[in-house]
Length: 147
Image 1 (cartoon, rainbow, N blue to C red):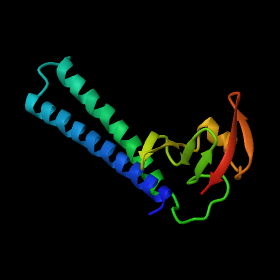
Image 2 (cartoon, rainbow, N blue to C red):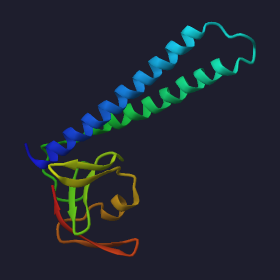
Image 3 (tube, one colour):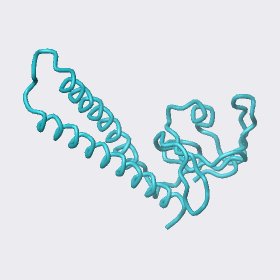
C-alpha cells in the first residue's frame, strides 16, 4: 500500500473514532436524562443542560459524518499531477493531503497535514505542478511532488 493510501486509511480511521466517541457521548447524556426522569418544574436547569448537551453532540456528529463522507470520496487510484482535492502535495516546507481539515496526521513516522479544500494555502496551491513556486504569508513554497 502506498503512502497516500495509508494516509487516507489513517484519516478515515481517525474520523470513525471521532464519530464513535460522539455517539457514545450522546448515548450517555440521553441515559442521564432518562434516569433523571420528567422535568421537576418548568425551569428545570439540569434537564435543560442535558438536552443542550445532546443537541451540541448531535451537531458535532453531523459535521463529523460530513467529514467522513468527504474522505470516502477521495479517488485513491486517480492519477494526479496538479494540486486538487485528493492530492498529496510535498513542498519544501510541508507535506499536505488535500482532503478534510483534520490537522497533523502521522504515518510511518512522517508528519502530514490533512487540509480542507477551503483553506487559503490550498487556494494558493490549487492547480500548481511539481516545480511551481508560490509565496504564501511571506513564505516561499516550492511544490516538489504531487500525487
